[in-house]
Amino acid sequence: MADVNAKDLHKKLKDYLKKCIIVDIRSPEEYEEEHIDGAINIPLETLVDNIGKLDKKKQIIAVCLTGLRSKRAVNILTLKGFNAGIVEGGMIEWRRALGPAYFAAMAGEGEGE
Image 1 (tube, rainbow, N blue to C red):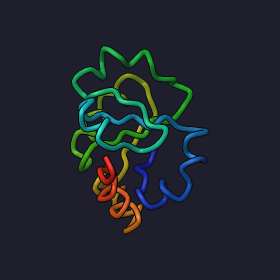
Image 2: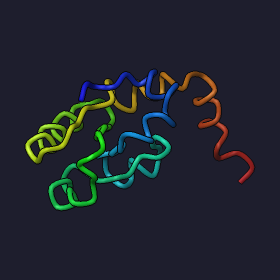
Image 3: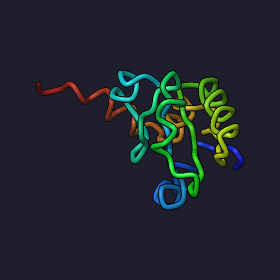
């Protein structure tokens, strides 16, 4: 699978989720802080042990903060027979794709509590 542009993924997320599994390979803490809607969390260090949770019939899109861990995950997945790619630029590019409204919402999350 070719790598996926974050802006394209954001625009067509529902379409991607029909044919792909988005795997967030960051730590559970990073995932809880923010993640792409519909993504599942399988940290890179547990990927081999949890690979059975993934459907080989679906394309896998790996995401991390910058794309470095995702590339390692794609190497593992490809060796195991999966069709896999990354979100180019990781969550940093995902944030940019969401634009200013995302940052305003994140800044206002703690208000009123």
